[in-house]
Image (cartoon, rainbow, N blue to C red; front, side):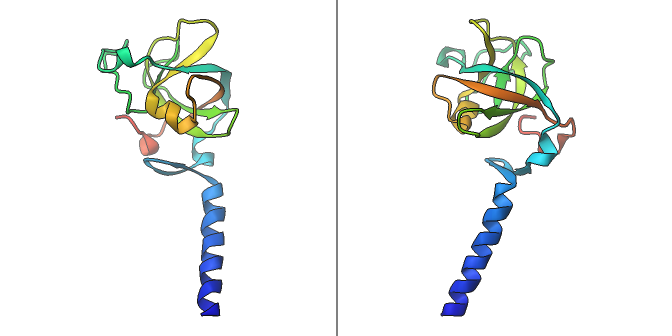
Length: 141
């Protein structure tokens, strides 16, 4: 019995250490080294209003609150960003599909799925990183 407990403890410690070096997102484990290239910008992010769900975005796609998307004022559509909530350290991968936000000094409008993953309920400070261009971790295709 003691040996079994010891094995379970060592296995748990190993798995915990592996998870600490990766971003555990709903579409799988993505190594942070595979995503972060360099910080592009930082600022305040907000959440899309519910009234935009189902409407066409500037890119022509229909906006879906359950997808990991965002709006940015000038980044090309399809740009993938790693967004980090600077208050709690949570991270997610989003794709630019719309233009905005056009309110105050905000740098991103996030879908509800992205905001929930980041732990954002209103507005929050974020840091945004360029994601590598390979399609291996593409969430929204």
